Image 1 (spheres, rainbow, N blue to C red):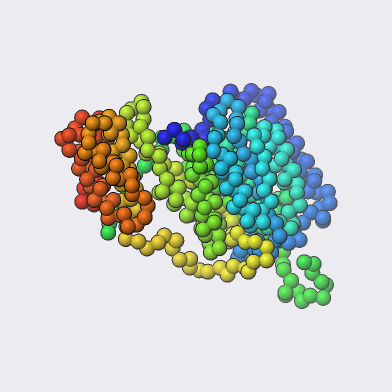
Image 2: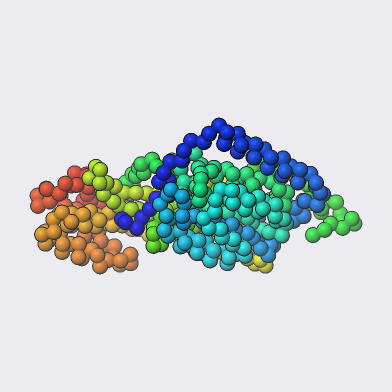
Length: 413
């Protein structure tokens, strides 16, 4: 499909010289020293007066009037293909998160130096009155956590380190979300076919009612969301945006009223992994390939994160959350296989435009949309397409031996 793009780098970056490496290390040490001095000066002033109570089960966003989201968006990266469609992701993120009181700050096509300055200023911000902080990075990427600024490659850890709370006390007990839409390598995407059967404290308060101090690891309260698995590419549609970001925004819209953010991300992972695929022909091997994507979520959240507007009723944490998948008899893999065989039929017709029977089958299957009343018809049509593509008439079809056929509810080669 011409409109699909992955987020891998087009040109490898030249190896860094020892001098550049030393300069970067010295700059990093200088920054750390500055932050440590900053934390020591006025130490009593820089504490989180609105930290959550020790036994709080949620992050209580409903108690905070505002949240913050920074979007580092890269349409144009030096030496790489333009990321057409990323503007759709920016728009979706802005609309979705503004509904929950997020101040959305969009920065486009910034250099590495500019990004470091933006992050440094953000980490100095007093977040006492904020409920949640999020950063979304939309760019090209590579292995080992490398992502692209406009001018050079840097590691995603350079973003995450700005939100560790040992030097940023107003972020203590605040959830920090990092969303990264970028490739994580160029490894081949492997797939498998799944089979399935049918305030201030007054001195006269009672001590036992006063919140006691407690300790937390500095890495707590962080959620990092990657669009793809280690070493694998991510996919983006030129017209509609990336699978991952668009799915996040849709699922938040559908489920935020009843489900916490991590539960929503499970649904995002399932939708991207199951419902999305790109079928294309490998011009080198002449084989039909199915491109898939598996998002990865890394979490140190220690409470439930519900997206809530200021003043909304608090969420009562339940021990049981009902399953989100509807109870239906129709197997999802059957529907997926119908779409797959329809694509195979299209490729067959490209090679055999004179096969009128195949053309008639293709004309019929094109009229069926996703409504459930078409499921039984699709099942019959799936069998008819399979029978035709493995018939003697289609013996010369060069991809016949690679097609996964369907017969009486079973998949065969």
